Amino acid sequence: MTEKTGMTRRVALQAAAAVAGGIAGVGAATGLARAQSSTSTSGSSMTSSETSNGAMTPQWHRVSLGEAKVTTILDGTRPGDGPYPTFGSDQSAEAMAALMRENYLPEDKFVNMFNPVVIEIGGELVLFDTGMGPMGRANGSGHLRSVLPQAGYKPEDVSIVVLTHFHGDHIGGLMEEDGPAFPNARYVAGQKEWDFWTSDAARSGPSSGGADLVQKNVVPLKDKMTFIRGGDAVIAGITGMDAFGHTPGHMVFEVKSGDRTLMLTADTANHFVASLQRPDWQVKFDMDKDMAAATRKAVFDRIAAERLPFIGYHMPFPSLGYAKKEGEGYRFIPETYQLEI
Image 1 (cartoon, rainbow, N blue to C red):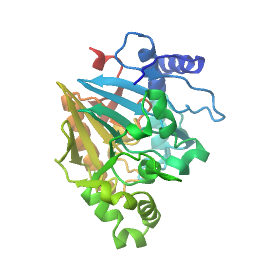
Image 2 (image 1 turned 90 degrees about the vertical axis):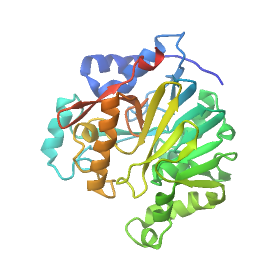
Image 3 (image 1 turned 90 degrees about the horizontal axis):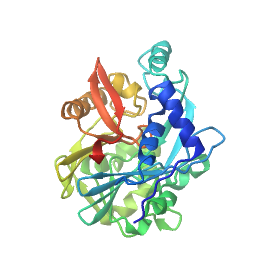
Image 4 (image 1 turned 135 degrees about the vertical axis):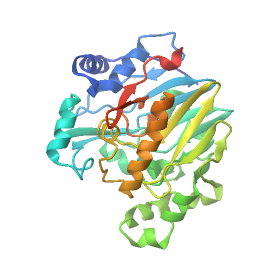
């Protein structure tokens, strides 16, 4: 395993903009904090280049959690219009614009990020979610397998793949054209998620497109798959928890090593301002919107009360931070050096 640090001109400019402009650049600011210490126990690849749309190119970021090593991989980014009405469809466009303006963010544009997580723990290399895979590469994502070696791993090193849920941006990277992307892995998924996406109802209703991808990418791996329910352990130190609403069987995971605890919140909150500061506002991709809002508040109430670090799949890269209870929701606070001391 290799670890490295570095900082390009683009990252420096992003970090400077974050300092001057507020939380819009939290990912770059965190990366700068990592890069400043060559003796840090974490490593981060900050090599990036300017893309035609200004989005970040794939990279990786590592911190220690007790004896475990936690690496976030930027599978890719998707710039586009929004966040309204993908977020806040039950509100007005003006209300969302005002919220973005208050947080130094563009009012009608946003960048979605896709952030699988790799954890070295207990002699296993555990991957949580797989990014877009081949179907995303023409549009700037699907780079998990190509970035892994930069972080010191090979796809063959992954021993367990955990799927938080079965949406395409989480299962797209399970398969390559020549077969499984992680050929030596076994797989873990929620029983309820499997039951829904392989049901006749899912395959014949509005979710049929997603169910077709499950048939293509997930079902062929069934013989290597273990199904869990809330409270079950993946391995010692990693426990699954029910977090339904975004999908019928969506799960989050608690990771413990030594005296440290980290939450992997998957798609419980999908925008670091819109979903966290306004957890009751509806999200287009939440299949049960009321349940998803209740789950969001339950999960982040705990994270805020216990001051737990968390990684959210769509949070600003490197996706690691804290949630402080504030007003009707939570304020995202990027991790800087809290896990180093």
